[in-house]
Length: 279
Image 1: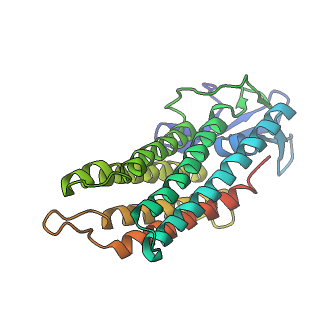
Image 2: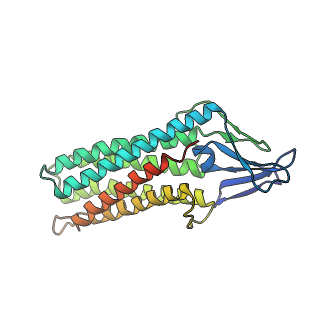
Image 3: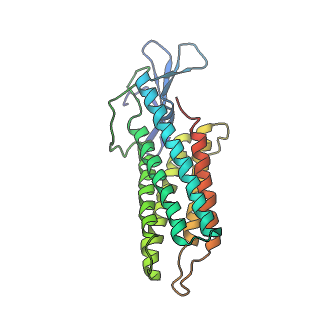
């Protein structure tokens, strides 16, 4: 960072791609998502038209592969349970407690996937100014790096899963007034959806290195696009679930249930695709 011959790209104050010349000739290209997901740095030798992706050391590669697998499976299972909870709420006969229990189990997997995604960012191998390889740092369970776009995106995702947890816990409460339902159940739901949407927008900006655009030939674009669609559907579901004080009923329970079901399936699909984005 800070070298005058570097070329930085990104969104706003965030750098998501950095290109610099190497001392012996050629160039190196660091991309934030590729570094934290695949653990590679692109290096182009002098005179070559294309570069090759140089992997980090075995410690980093093993670490990233394991974290990716855990996060992917957690989102697949969490999304499947949320879809099942929506189906139970729509067509089941067990009552609200049964669907709330399925949702809560799914929420625990979303919590796991969100935190492990943050761990991927915290423990991603880093580039060094002028270097031609990524450097592995000691393992950390937490960091505070708000000027990194990838950290901010995954932190907001994890925060969103925690807020959803409040919503899911409060959904077990019974005998609430309309005002209490909207304050204790609906409000955390909407806040969680907003955090998911912002996280997804930042993830798109990271992949596109600026303003989001169509990139259908890239797996990482499909992953973040499918997850963002799931976030939009969750928000539609949350808005439709608002309880009107005048009637004491939700705006549209059908839209709320179908929005949750289809949005959850998007997150499951995103988790499946993420299994293939590894070192």
